[in-house]
Picture (cartoon, helix red, strand yellow):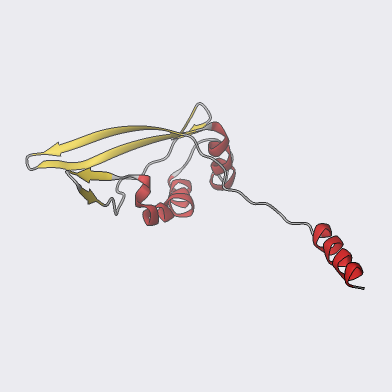
Amino acid sequence: MRFKSTWISLVLILSLQSVATAHPHVFIDCDLLFIFDSEGLAGIEQRWVFDEMFSTMMLGHFDRDKNAVLDSDEVNGLREGAFANLQNYDYFTHILVGTKRFVADKVTDFHATVQDNRLI
């Protein structure tokens, strides 16, 4: 009897289907521009150029008129829908001033364009 219930349990476990989910990999070419004023470093400008697959996915969600040109409402939707949450991860920007960590806690002047099928 014990063998039979073990066998039934094994069959049930093996017959269950599970869905595997994974975060897609995103490839980014990043350029940095350090901005100085009379007091020293005033900011860092980052330019992210995304791979075509991620770009296509984002444009599919946020380019509502499907013209590969992002108007201001589409840029705002992209910022809020895909990038605002990156604040929780310091925008994947890690800055050390000496040995002290500086936290990038805000983004100003967010822009988004499409060039050569890549989101910038």
